[in-house]
Length: 491
Image (tube, rainbow, N blue to C red; front, side):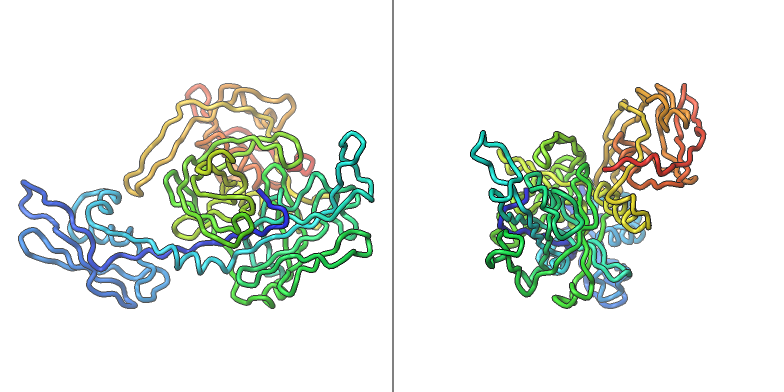
């Protein structure tokens, strides 16, 4: 969903959770001798927040919740903190979800969060030399006289302000890739054919747009990107993950705005969780849309990146996104990144998609590792292919009342082993239930079939890998295999 000649941007979100001064009381509990009528927040200072409990017989008690990690005016206080202290004070046995429903009136100030998070918002312009359809049969041709300059735009986030003097950005691969680019598109850089010959980003609040400025020395239309433009270097990308990494010198970025920040990654996500996207929707200016995570994992087929149909694991969201949102961040109510928006349903605006956090993080760290490994032969991203096909069984949803949400888990069962593969050398066998991938002695639990491919993004040559399985009802740790550079497959 990149957009031609239009802009897109995104932002990280930091959500402020505020407890109202008078918190909602529970309804009358008939047959109970004494019950809680209401909880009132009575004071807040640097040491924490105090609460007054009023009971049905008119008596009261108080408790204090200490400030969180920020330790400033109780601003890091969470509803979970109040819940835990309330249980300790009253001895009442109730779940976190029940506590929220009965006693708390919780409000979320998304406006404050969005405004703070705009510090990591960027919009991306990618410049290509595209071929034009010729008059002979309508074929695309790299003939120079029929080529033109094309500029596309999408969104991005500041991923890392690194110690090496560079700021690293993340966007969609399809924002900086163009299958219609001419063979000489890479003239003047080393990005290779089909990757933009020039990539420019703008920080939120210091925005600009390309303006035609005559004809360049190469004979193509030239563009002036203006005073706020930050020219970026293409670090690497993955067409299989639809993720690309860019970078620019941090001093050049901070010359435009010193008050930038990098996104904070969430620990996970769940169905029903708030999903907020910030982007330059349809190129008409940066706007915020909010919805929820509708499905935590599904697969869609995309073929419009390079014409090859590929299956992508995505989050489904009902958050509205449009052309220009490509590469933008998707954030939860705490302002943490849970995905990168990349596709939408043109027939139903309530069905849109984002690349999940695990794939974003795994792919980006993978690309950065091989970019900086000192080996000129490894550029872009790589994965390990184990040579195992799996199916699932005993899939079920389990609700966790302590946090108020649940998750799906399933057994991952080996259905086929490729001859000569890593899986065969490790000793996997058809019918094994894989319970964990073991990497250098550390066990990573597998409770969804996609865990294997996502963990594969984190593996590097030299890692010793094995599997823990259940075979014929008995747990077993299989033999170890040390990964080689020759095991790498480009992504």
